[in-house]
Length: 225
Image (cartoon, rainbow, N blue to C red):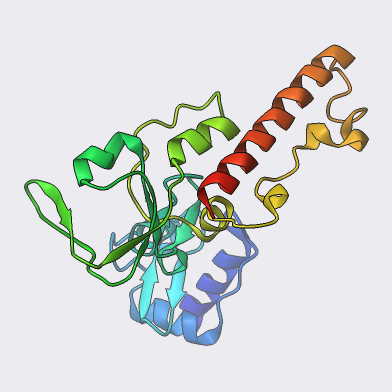
């Protein structure tokens, strides 16, 4: 037991991508009880690229990939990874999928769950009555294309939004804070990151970004009353 414990401790100190890592005594005991393997895929903790998630509370040892599959999800708008429990009760319906789901475009809040029904063959069928409430008329695809015109964001998956996107697209005041200040708009960055850019190019880029920021703020003011 002592040799195996020492092996786990030393491996965590030096062999993972994000080493040094430290497991406490309870976690080490759980790892040993689970034969030093991921509960889902069975991969040895000594073969992983990075340290596993060891939850004494759940009595579970999971490699990074299995943990992500079980407990994390991706925001359909910003595509950042979030814990499932951190996701909000807000979701959007775009013009692209509004006809399919029988609801007008906008952002909706889930009032009770389950809020829709379907089956394994056809997928989504319809929303339950009084299970969702529309909170904004904003077209998420249009709003996204204003901020990111070079990225193709058609057919965004209908799914719940992360806290950051919910705050961003549902803002009802102080609209200037709806989008971050691009570093190219900061004068102190002119002779650093953008030192190789001509004044004309800097001017064009700044004008384009300012226009997009103002247009986006106007869209929020129009739809989030």
